Amino acid sequence: MSYISNTDNERKEMLAAIGVDRIEDLFAPVPEAVRLKRLLNLPGPSDELALLRHCEKMAALNKDISSSLSFLGAGIYDHFRPAIIEVLVERGEFLTSYTPYQPEMSQGMLQVLYEYQTLICALTGMDIANASMYDGATALAEAAMMTTDITNRDEVVVLSTVHPHYRQVLQTYLHWAQFVYKEVAPNLEAISAALSERTACVVLQQPDFLGYVASDIANTIEIVHAVGALAVTIVDPISLGILCTPADVGADIAVGEGQGLGISPGYGGPLLGFFACRKEYTRYLPGRIVGATTDQLGRRGYTMTLRTREQDIRREKATSNICTNQTLLALAATIYLCALGKNGLRKVAELVIRKAHYAREALCSIPDITDPFPGRPFFKEFVIQLPIPAQDVCDKLLEKGIMGGLPLQPYYPELGNALLVCVTETKTREQIDRYAETLQSVVTEMTAYAK
Image (cartoon, rainbow, N blue to C red; front, side, top):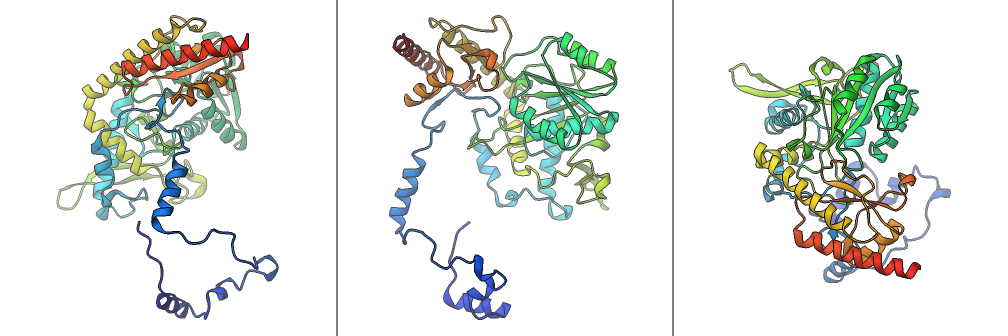
């Protein structure tokens, strides 16, 4: 949005319209004792060229995926974004994420949301999806809260291989709602021991935070259902181009982070949570649902079908307090999925698997670097064990223009010097080889220095 300063005459007109003589009069309600009685400590005015250079200098301090080779993942991913996304998302008609309260004025956006819901259902195999959530972590928290309403139970069991940040957000929600949070190891024995008549749901992630794909998830969900609890799965939408859907393995609710669907991984966001479930739970679904209908002339139209928010109905009847959501990003995800199509999404998933496995072999062939989970299937992320602290290695790699991955010691101390590495379809063989060669050089140098 362009900024045009107010002229002296415009300021006079505005002050006259509100009935005061000076701008200072606007601050009359502020007590004298707390007013700042000096000018702000700001630099003087700058010409446009100098200001541009100053901003460029500050921006150059950032390390981003356009100037560095990134093998970071852990929830935010560098997937290819077709140019058509930016072209369509930037159209003026779409530049708001606010609720389309007047359907007759918002048919374009409502149709996009309807198609987004349809695509999420197709991806997950579920019956119904809402019109987006804030991000994957809050989508999970909303799902867990939803299961406590459905089952009238107060315990949520979470596998320790669920994303640590998701677990933190979930704990925050459950603590203040006075529900019980249980964290268990990712094996059938531990899960079975944690279940009881108080269990509302079990939360699983596929692939899990470490990137690995569980082969027994359907068996786990059967055990969960046997005690009357529900299964909530967190899924990577790109992986669904090739892996079983949540519905295939018997999940009741599917949530996840949609950033990989055509959204740039910038400064920790923006993000897009998706949420889908079985149709019998429609009335418990948080957020909003867009439906298709016909008008008086028999023409197809779109409108809000369910809005069970505290703004729209009595607060105690609301399913959630989620407000303005990520509509613009849902539009980006819709364009991405439509541009790729079913076959395109599968091709992306296949490329990811092939390149990630090539990278794992290349990195684990380096002396003193091992695979702590040999033989476990994975999608685009995997763990390698380094002979020296992973954070120190990553700092050295960054000096050489490579983001090497995520050190896991802060999240899983028992894994020691483990490093989580992510490889997507955007990486070439040459880039992976460069990473392996640089990593070997750094590890050799640092190991020798340590001795």
